[in-house]
Length: 100
Image (cartoon, rainbow, N blue to C red; front, side, top):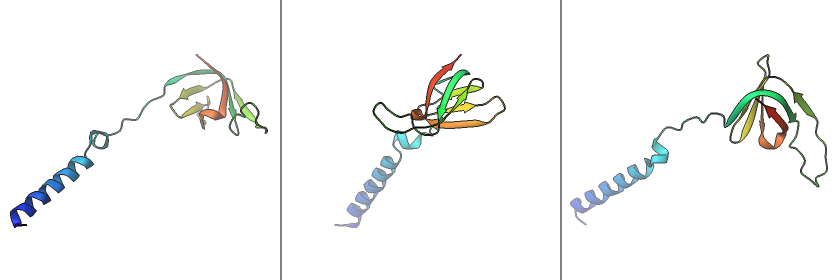
């Protein structure tokens, strides 16, 4: 191979790597998604462990919230007490959510 062919192949390789590394999903800054739902808590039970499914054996204690704010995100919730204390939990660790 002559030097020109090697240069062209090298240029194509570099261009391909740059384009592959700069695909739209990789180059655009990720936007922080806000909560899917949020509101003032009327009632929310936040469990110490995931809520047992029907047929599972075990127990778990819970904390009951009747005031504050709740923010429900795609993979977790955030309960913000009226004094500012925040609690974050995955979706299988809360139940009986009522909010305005």
